Image (cartoon, rainbow, N blue to C red; front, side):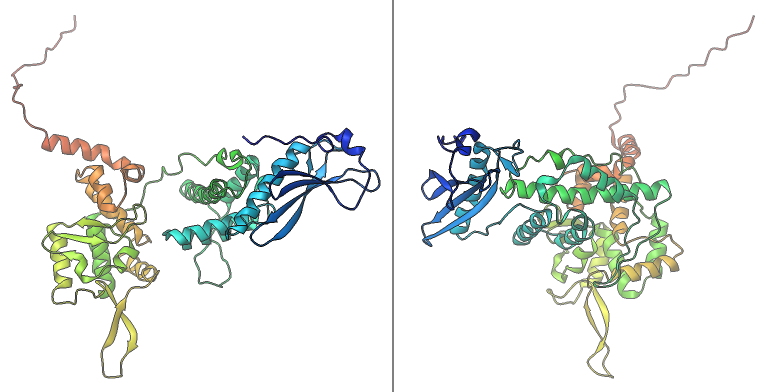
Length: 445
């Protein structure tokens, strides 16, 4: 713990008020190249605190104003400072200046939520964080418009919880192209829709907490973290059951898909892979000897995994890889471009979000309620669980590091699957035989 340096001239308001006014502040050295100063007021008001730093490498002096002295007003440890508080604030500034002298990025002045987000985004990009694009959209759409200009020190628990609550009542935004006018869906009315909005609000709150915790961890702010750590998320918002297809519905969907999209849908149903993971597969990712498909680093574990295929799945992947170049994208889409008028249309890899329109058309043709491509992953997982596959195996198949996400989303399916599995697989002990015992019938008197 840093000890405050005493000063007979500056450490009490009584001694400071006796100082004659002058242009230069009264300095007290705190460390080599670091000093705290006091400007007496010219007309008898409160003086001001300042700090001075000497950069020995650049051989330059830097000076900043810290706040008003508590000569006549009570200190609030922000704008009005005691001698001890002024020292503490000066040391924070000195640390920032030392960081700048070492070539590190220096933050000048109080930290705003926007600055905290920018620092978080730079670090996330450096680490190769997956999903940074969607996180950026979340921050720019829901966090920065409300809190961007605010200083982190001004955030309160009540303020964050009020914003979080109001966010859950707003209608969802419609996904649109970059630069297009923002549009919204209808306001949530049904219990399911309201739960979905609460769940979305919880995810936005998680992003806000993540960037503020990052700022705190990196020393960008010295404020207490209770304001956001104590802000409560909605409970039991994940009670809605995820949508998944029955085998009959899956067959109907596959049958009506366009040829290229049909292969992609089959790949998702056989592996449980996300659209982005399937779009990134190449022919050599299918290992016929092992009966598995290698799927690149997942969003959760950051590691590649091998999706185990059923006999039907192995036959499917064998049929779409035979005779093809090993580094060619596994799933291709027919392009509108051609080499010339006589040549066939070119094939290319699927691009981001191209599956959405195809899925809508297929659901309409199959007379199914609209669903997104990701729900094919839910269909794969629910099929495994309903057939008695242990949750740990399902988690590994989906690329989760543990079973928490599986239990959260599919836990309601596990009890019946567990009972069926135990009845089918448990050993028969042969320690009980049925006996011909008739029930007693009591006669009424």
